[in-house]
Image (tube, rainbow, N blue to C red):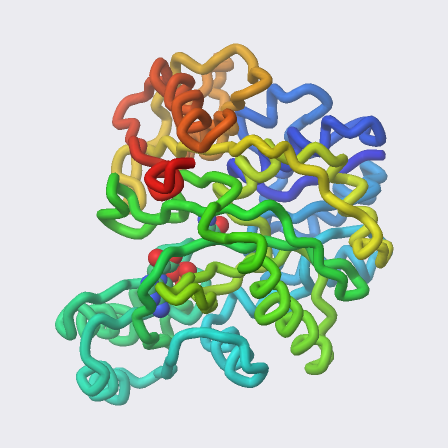
Amino acid sequence: MKVLVVGGGGREHALAWKIAQSRRVTDVLVAPGNAGTATEPKVRNVPVAAEDVEALLRLAREEHIGLTVVGPEAPLAAGIVDRFVGSGLRCFGPRKAAAQLESSKKYAKEFMVRHGIPTGRHASFTDLDEALPYIRAQGAPLVIKADGLAAGKGVIVAHTVEEATAAAEQMLGDRAFGAASECVVVEEFLQGEEASFIAMVGVDGAILPLATSQDHKARDDGDRGPNTGGMGAYSPAPVVTEALAGRVTQEIMQPVVEGLRREGVRYFGFLYAGLMIGPDGTPKVLEFNCRFGDPETQPILFRLRSDLTELLDAALDGKLGKVRADWDPRPALGVVMTAEGYPGKYRTGDPISGLPAAGSANSKVFHAGTGLDTEGQVVTRGGRVLCVVGSGATVGEAQRVAYEVVAPIRFAGAHYRRDIGYRAIARGL
Ligand code: AMP
Ligand code: GLY
């Protein structure tokens, strides 16, 4: 079977790497891919943009692709799955209507209220003159979110009313994120520890929770600095105990799939709930993503022993309830290396040196924003450049392995956090 992976980040490198390990798979095509997928056995890049749905459809037909897996949110929100499925092609990911769970925060919040799914209090505004009095009445801290997709940058955690007001003014007044911030959600600030809960959902609504994970969204050590797409992640996340995972499945994942079904939308694909686990252990939803997390995918798939294509096929055949995923019990931890300036305007084109020639049994460098220049040199092409995964008997050991691989890697302006996994390690894990 030939498999197409849509996207070109670290998540897609991990997906392609894992799928290529399947004995059932002859070729993995990645559109557009990166320097990591360009050099992976059985994997090749095709120069088609992840958002170019019509070109992807032509590619899938010409190449006789048996299964397509969509990584990023943009093609999902653009309706790639509707087009593929409508053309008789197998494609794993939610349809456009279901992808609204991620592409509109207002829709997601209202959906959760309709279906009694636990989340912070909120109000949505399109008019700055209405938002400002509400913000002043609520007081700080408050969270201001652009309604639409803003690559993880449309969320401001405001510690003062002034910060909250400034964020609302930028989004609604100055349209800082264009159409994505025509509407703004003002949300209650939730205290606790964050975790990512990611599941596969089959066409029959069956839910297969994947190994738990936690990512670090802030740019700097100690979870300080601006919010990013993710600076590192590890799996499992000790904060998500088995009991809590059961609760999240019952109180959040099942009601989402069931609630959508009652509203006429059948969800299938990866479903990601960003959670805040309160001090009393109650999980509340911060956001939904209609895709696998990045960088969570990298440590999670590093631990997956099962054939991913068998799980994907089971989901598309309505048999997900009958399969199990087999996980390496050892924790895996990924450290993201970023380009100078990220998450703001960043530099690209810098040569990367010190990359290991190959992965090992306990480590792997997944590429994200990388490319090959005309001489075949690996250069930076994006904000998040690499995700270096290590595994070990404990989170602490996995962390040590990951940082050992990171140490010799160099590119101008490289930045990475030195404390990925600190919460788990502080718990003695
Ligand atoms: P989101 O994209 O909605 O997950 O928000 C990005 C980040 O902002 C989250 O990972 C949290 O760290 C933070 N955040 C979002 N909403 C809240 C909230 N209601 N309370 C506290 N922190 C939040
Ligand atoms: N790591 C957060 C995300 O994938 O959105």
